[in-house]
Image (tube, rainbow, N blue to C red; front, side):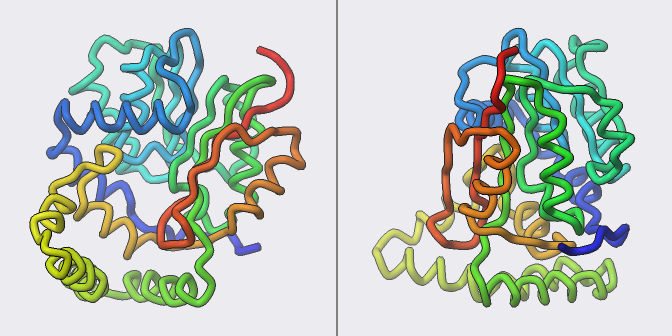
Length: 275
């Protein structure tokens, strides 16, 4: 197990820059993403804990889906401020139904103070803490009986994952003003291959649409910065995540893998018991 570290990538600064791109179309896409992962068309009457809230976009989606109570938690102070601004701009009616605070999923006291929740959501976060399995455990413990755990964990690609770990470590040592160039350089081969593939198939416009698309409501560039800079970085095979969570009294309700490629495998688990 990796050791927890305070040398975590500044996701908050990245998502603060993203905030000005948010519009109703991005919010609608984020809502669809949450609905797909939690397997519900509404969160009416349910409580929603967002661990590693980042920009606050998916907490906002939970609000729009009618969650009765939302708590956004993030280790990064910039993410906390960005989420507060997201709430101010797009959910002025939320009031005390939506609370936002700085906190660490690895801090047992902080997590215990939160109590339990109907839906615990953490997309692409727990593997960036420096102690992934402890972070997964921390999220598990906050799920109420009969509640759901919705998580996304980076896929283990073997050697490729080790290479990307080196790339991410390298980002930490690049001066701030040069980091966009580092991201562009690291992603250029992959992007060039994608462009060639689309051009070769006679659909170069598909590559442009890929950049204009809003997967989960996010922007392509900010996702690339997230990917290249995101360190600490741990990975797991789908079966490892399944076994770890099942042993703690959960059943797997839904699984969406990235088909062995780069990216996150998405899981929806349900805790035994009833609400």
